[in-house]
Amino acid sequence: MPSDEYLQGIYYIQGRDFVDAGIVSSEIKKSLKDKGIPESIIRRVAVITFEAEVNMISYSEQGTIQLFIEPDAITIQADDIGQGIEDIELAQQEGYSTADDSIRELGFGAGMGLANIKKYSDIFEITSNPGDGAHLKSVVKL
Ligand SMILES: Nc1ncnc2c1ncn2[C@@H]1O[C@H](COP(=O)(O)OP(=O)(O)OP(=O)(O)O)[C@@H](O)[C@H]1O
Ligand SMILES: [Mg+2]
Image 1 (tube, helix red, strand yellow):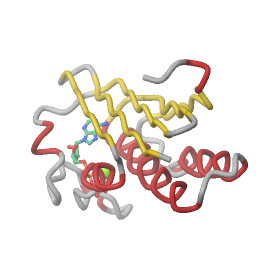
Image 2 (cartoon, protein in one colour; image 1 turned 90 degrees about the vertical axis):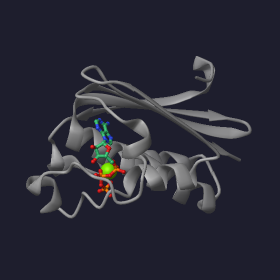
Image 3 (cartoon, helix red, strand yellow; image 1 turned 180 degrees about the vertical axis):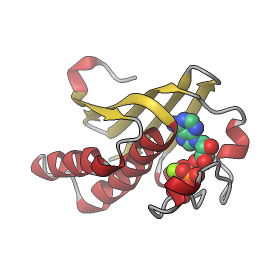
Image 4 (cartoon, helix red, strand yellow; image 1 turned 135 degrees about the horizontal axis):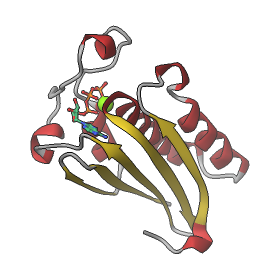
């Protein structure tokens, strides 16, 4: 994780709170705009944070997204407490999803979130202890 001097914000996410889905990624988008970050970078960070946020709402009890802005990179660190991920390789495959009907009814559950996070990241790391939660780090270079 980058040093705290680059920490722009910590955003809290409540599991199962679909009403608020997208609020954190919108706030992050706005703060990057205010800082004059290029549009093309903001679009990538917005996809990454939105997918991480919806995954936390869908599959965890609660979590945080920390945003770091360094002179040459933006880092998104997403940590949650919850069921975690049994098979990380499988979870990253396009089309793989354990979403139940309540999630699918809302239009999520295509199994594309982690694949898209990976696609838009210059560096992508995901770790998990099943039963504890999931940890995701994404770096977008400036
Ligand atoms: N934070 C998390 N905690 C526990 N499991 C997760 C978490 N994030 C993802 N997963 C697991 O990985 C699977 C794949 O996630 P991914 O975001 O790629 O797809 P999805 O959420 O199922 O569908 P989509 O993102 O396209 O709406 C999920 O169905 C879930 O089983
Ligand atoms: Mg998802």
